[in-house]
Image 1 (cartoon, rainbow, N blue to C red):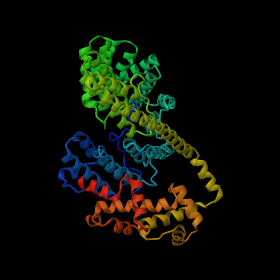
Image 2 (image 1 turned 120 degrees about the vertical axis):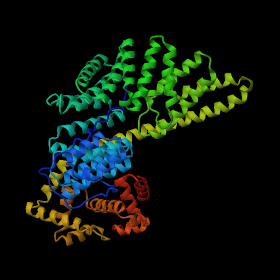
Image 3 (image 1 turned 45 degrees about the vertical axis):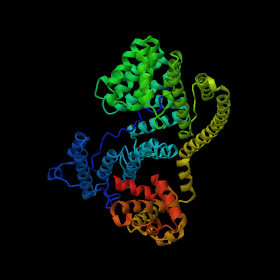
Image 4 (image 1 turned 30 degrees about the vertical axis):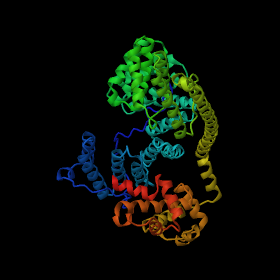
Length: 571
C-alpha cells in the first residue's frame, strides 16, 4: 500500500512557548478583526487563554474572543514570541483555508525575524511549508522546509528537525522516490531512539513508526512492517493519541491482508472504521477498499461489494486518489459476473473520467496505473460492452468508438509522454533545491572570504537597515542598491553582502518583500486602502508598474491582490 496522504507531521497542537528571555518588537505585522472581549478574559494569563482555546475550540464565537484577547495582550506587552503564538492561534482557526492561514505563518516569520529562540522562526517556516504542501505547491513547500530545517539545526530543535524531514520524505514519496523516503524514516527513528519517546517525542515516534510500516508494506517486507506496527500500536495504547491509533489499526489491517491473515485484517479494519471521527477521510476510503478485498477472500461477497460501493458513492473528480482505483476495477468484474451491463458501463465511464481528471490535476506525478485495467484496455472493454448492449446498430457504433478509442489512445500516449517529461523536470528542480541548500553555507563562507566585513561595521549597517524598515523608506519609488547604500552611508558591496547573508535574499527580493508585507498590513488595517485600484495600490507601496507588483504579491501569497482582498473580506 502506497499511502502518501496520511500523517503529515507538523505538531501544531498549540505547544506554545514561554515569553521569558526573548526580544521585544514595536511593530505589529498583521491586524486581526476586532471582536468584543469580556472582562473575564482580559484578566486571564497566556497559559489560561491557551487552555480555554483548546477546551472551546469548536465554539467559533468564543474562540475568536479568546484569540483576539491573546494577540492584543501580546502586542500590548510587545512580546515577539507571544505575538507569534497569537498568530499561530489564528493559523489554527483558518487551517482549512490555506490561503488565509498562509498570511498568519508569514506574520509569524516576520515578527520573529532576528529573534534567537529555540522554536522561532523555524516554526513559521514549518507551518508555511505544510500549507504549501497542502496546496500542492511542492517546490515552495520544499524551500520553506529547508529554511526551517536550517534554523532548527542551529538551535538543535530535535522535534522540528524530525517533523521537517518527515514532511520532506512525504514529498519524495509523491515523486516516486520511495527508497529515499524509507531512509529518512529510518534515520528519524534512529534519532528518536536517543530521545524521550514516552513523553516529549511520543507523537513523533508513533507517526514515524506508522510511515515506516507503510514503506515496508510498499516494498512487500510485510514481517518488518508488522514488527513496527505492533510497536506503534503498543505505544499508542499507553496514552491518548486516538488519531494515530486509528491510522495504525488501518495499516495493521492492510498488513494482515497481505500476510493472508484475513480474519485479523477484517477485525482491525472494522475497528479502525469505528474510530473514523479521528481519521482523515482518504484513510477511510482506503480502509473500505482493503475491507472489501478482505471480505472477498473470506467469500463474503455481498458485504464486500457494499464497502466497494461506498467508495463509488464517495469518489468524484476532486477527491479521487489512485489507491482507490482498484475498487472500481473490482466493481467492474462484479457487474460483469452478474451480467449487469448498465452498471458495468457506468463504472467504466466513471473510471476513465477519474483517471483523466487525476492526470490533469497531478501532471507532475508519475502515474502507475494498474496493469489489468489500464486506460487503453478499459476503453477497449468499454467498446465491446457498448457493442453487446447496442448490437442492432453495431456498424455505426463500431465506427464511432474505434475513432473515439484511437483519439483517446493518442491523447493517453501524449499525456503519458508529457507526464514523464514533467516528472523528470520536477525531479531536476527538486535536486537543484537540495543542492542549493547543501551548498548554502559554503557559498556564504566564500562570500565572507571574498569581502571581509568588520563586526562593528556589520552591526552598524544592520542597525541602519532596521531604521530603514521602521521609517518605511522602502516605500519610495525607484530605489536601487546604490541609492539605498548612499542613504545608509555605506557602499553597495557591503550592503549587498549583508542583505544576502543576514536577510537570506538578494536586494530586489528584500525590497519587494518589505513592500508586500506593508501592503498586506494596509489591506487588513485600512478599509479605504482595500478600495484602491491595483495601479494606485502598486504606486502607494513603491512599485514602478502594476506587473511587478502583482508578480511580487503572488509570489508571497499565492494569489493576486484582488483575490486576497476578497478572501479577507469574506473571512
